[in-house]
Length: 95
Image: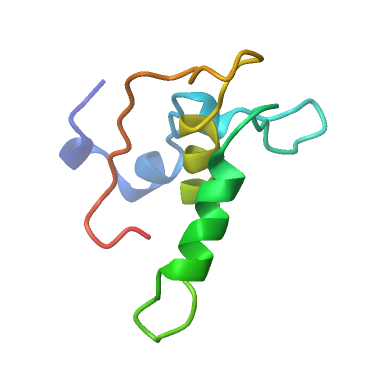
């Protein structure tokens, strides 16, 4: 594959994105695949209640951030965290 700088605008538009990790998995009906057991909903609720956004309103995660939190705090049937390592890397200004 040629370097990105050598691609035409049409070739760049035709590129397919790459998605890694459970945050991007979908169910057969197209819905997002979410963990069955997670503490993430409690984390999101705590953030909405106790953290403030720049405008003074409640903190709100983007949809992608919320899915990441739900997966990051996923637990198995024994209550043990299912993930021990993770990376969420985005461009500056994201979310």
